[in-house]
Every structure is written in structure tokens, then in C-alpha cells.
Image 1 (cartoon, one colour):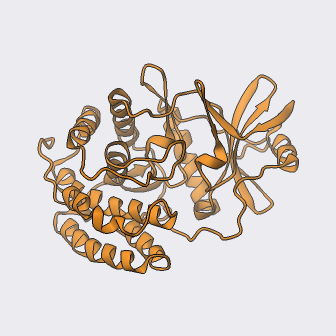
Image 2 (cartoon, one colour; image 1 turned 30 degrees about the horizontal axis):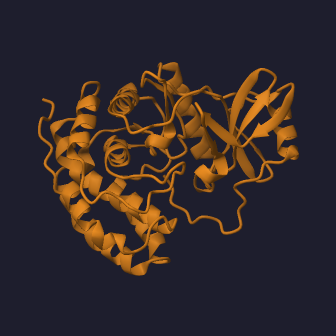
Length: 342
């Protein structure tokens, strides 16, 4: 995932009638009559501009069909990255993964650009959001394992590992909260050294989602995953990136209500029962190797740094969290994971 500073004056919220007309023309959609800036989940309604401020999004109605229109975020809107992302999504969907169909334009392209912005259009998928239920968490772990087991063939664009990503976030944070950035640098350096000594650099690479968290999955009432979305950050690297981020976002961190931002108050300790259960569900489909299990604590520590930096950059919480949550980092980075697969 490329790490780029958020544009100061970029408008992420407005989609006007001109965009509606351009989308209808590019995709050959007849009867397009409205944009809906909302997501529905049973009796719950969420405004898209409240949920996230990274790109323009809308539900589009065309006759009796619904689509989801999404602008590619500023940090990954170059053509090579979009091509990799769309190719991966189509490959996973053809392999039976619950990935929504990308709607092609009339010219057969899987994305379109106008007014300096790029967009993708998906078939709209109904589903329920993550509600913190164990069955949903296990279903998420297993669909992630299926994604990794699929080994879809795509070429790497950046091939950054978790330590590079964490370091890039620390660099951005230095402009905002320099004292916190210094602490993270001190934590990250020995962590990466320990990971390299444990063989992290020799781990096999595969296509990864790059942003596997509760907000990017939809579930059926019976807890089955109905859609995995938002492959903007996909890459080719160790699957521990996805595993570590999933463990943290499903089992450790908490989000603000109806928002992809983190909650101000976070747990003071790791729920190891939930973590163990998540990893057990993953292993039922695509077991981690002994070396991967040995390196997992270091990946968890690096992704924890990355996500905490992200929360500080978005002002989800104040700089004091670094000292308060340091025990959580140490707990993650020093954990020994047993039960490795032969």
C-alpha cells in the first residue's frame, strides 16, 4: 500500500449530476435516476460521508438494478495499481471467493477516469455489517484463508512489507506528533531486526488484500461472508500482513460507531481467547507454517504501529495513547504462538 499524505483541499463527499451522466454514458446504464449516499443494514442506515472520508462513494440505482460506485482513493489511484487491484478481484471472484463483480464500461474497461479522478463500479451486494459475533469472526478468518490459498496470479506493484509500511506511517506522523513518531521508531527498529533473524524475509509471497478489517466485509444472517470489498491496498507479500491486520481489527482494536475511525477508548489488554479462536479458524483452511507462526508476533507489532499512527494522523485519539498502549504492543510483539502446522 503506498503511503501518501492526504490532500488538503480534496473533496471526498460530493457527487453531482454531471458525474451521474458521465457514469451512465461510460457504463451504458439506462434509467439511472439517483445517487444514494447511504448504506442500509437491516434497520440501520449509515451515511457514507460519515463512515469514511477517503473517497467519494454512492449507491446508484438504474431501473431495478443497484450498483456501488467508488472513487479510487488518492493514495493508490495510479493506473498500474488499479490494474493490479481489478485483476486480483476478478481472479478471486472467478475462483469462487465472495468478491463483488466489477461492472465493465462499454469499452470493456474495469475502471474509468474523468475530471482527474478514477472510479470503479460494482454490483451492489446486500449484507450485514460486522457485529462482533464469534461466528462472524470465524467466518472472516476462513474467507481470508481461502483468499490466500487461492494464490491468484498478479504482478507486484510495490511489494512493501509490514515494516516498510509501518516506517512510512511513522514518517508521516513525524509532521503531526513528532514525539510519538520517535517512540514508534524506537519500537520498530529492534522489532524488524528480530523478524529478519527469524526468517521473515524468506517467507513465501502471495497476493494479499492489504486492508482486511471488519468494515470491508459483509455477512449473511447466518454469519457467512457475502462480500469482501476494498482491494485498493492489495499487494504481493507475506500473508502475515493480512493475518496480523485481521487479528488486530477483529480481536484487539475497537472502532467508533458507524465509522471506520478508531474509538477513542481502546482495550487495555489483548483478548487472547478471541485471537486464538481467529487463528484456529484460519488454520482450518490454510495453516500457517512454523516459520510464519514464529514471525507473526513481529508482524502484529509492526501493523499495530501502522494502525496506531493512522489513528493519530486522523486525530482519532490523542498522543497520550502511545504510553498507555505500550503494554499492548509488547504483549503482541512478544507473544509465542504454539500449535504450528507441520
